[in-house]
Length: 422
Length: 158
Image 1 (cartoon, helix red, strand yellow):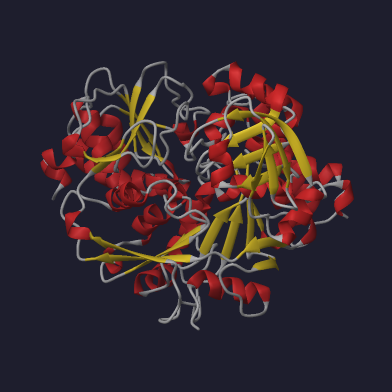
Image 2 (cartoon, each protein chain N blue to C red):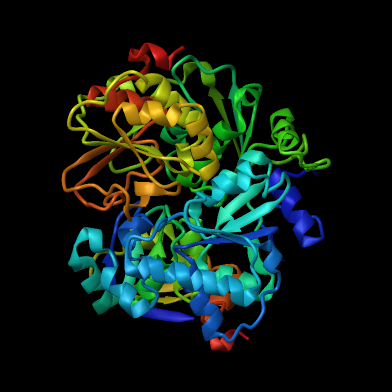
């Protein structure tokens, strides 16, 4: 019997062949945490008298949720994390300004194909874009992993998603994953590993694959992954990293379900409040006027996303009364966008650029919403109160949709702007 | 492992942002976290959970963010038992690893109304709702053992 990618990777970690449904005690290749989890981890380690970590070389800490600190309490937990790094000999601390964990993990080549990533962040599915598997876990179990070096996991069943054909102009990877959510709902992949395949997968770059995998969690998935191929190989070649011969799923692997998507039919889509799976083709929406537009986050804050928005906004001004926030996913994204004139084009159009990181997405800082306000966002969640106010309404769309809507002052089809389809 | 109390019922796809907003993630003590439990929905749900100790959800309870505060704030408020038609995997893990009794049981969750008295025996896979018996598949033995001894960091877990 062949293995899925999740089974192959978890078999390597378990030191024996394992299949979906089995419980294993394993040490993942990576055990990451963030500024919003490090305080709890410190508390568990101190309360239990932990004096050394099992594998500090597998740990990295990223300051992305509170960067830079906006309250004394957030400044405090960031300090706690810095002291913890000193205490336990953790070398990898990506401090304020470096960016979002998943973005850094992929763009720097820290995570390699065939690895398993754990992180105290649900969007860790994003790292599956490079033929790895990643999942979010809690702080108690992350502290336990750091202290003891192994933790229980269940080997997930997998879903094979076949992407066929080519995307039409004006449609994006975000629209693809929103289309999938519309079809399978927010419960469509609970406990499962979503594996992307098909003749259409080759057209998606690593940044686009990150978007596809990122929103796997919004379907309930444990992992979402694009198996290693020539696009992945090129990513690591460009980084001068030798990844050897990474594992891929076997041709005769067993899947719990198979979904097939015809990419040519995917249109710009919008998820409407307050459910991520309440997805509509943009042309079917009634008029929705906006107060804020957010471009950024682990879903769509990459160089390519900023470039798409700049293509639409260059030489124009966003609508009066609309604020547009741009939060690069990482310092590397920021620098590249600066060098290419993209940041200048966005600022000239009226955008506000914020510190690389998670930005306003989680409703913590850098652009929370007032009561009854409406935001179009390139992020992944539109839950009640998500961006800081229970009566605010969040619509989710692609970077092109965000930019075109900021220009119009209402949610519009990006294909109405010539530059979005060129 | 047995748990009992009076049910507070919530709907489908209740996410962890609603259970515990992100702006309080630096609050580390479960008793302090409990002050923000279900804050976006107003104070009523939190008060009922404090009084009754049992939360009953629909499908996909605890979806979204991985924040374990969603579980530990429930524990801090005195919740002893959570029953749902299905759980988001991270919320489920956080419950097991922190010693909060969880039951996956679509029919049982459907049968429970707000204010019902619920008793559950996790190992036996049996529950009584207002005196009426129900059955559900018990958790896998590995997880039942872990949650029964209070989670990963329980003094009893050594």
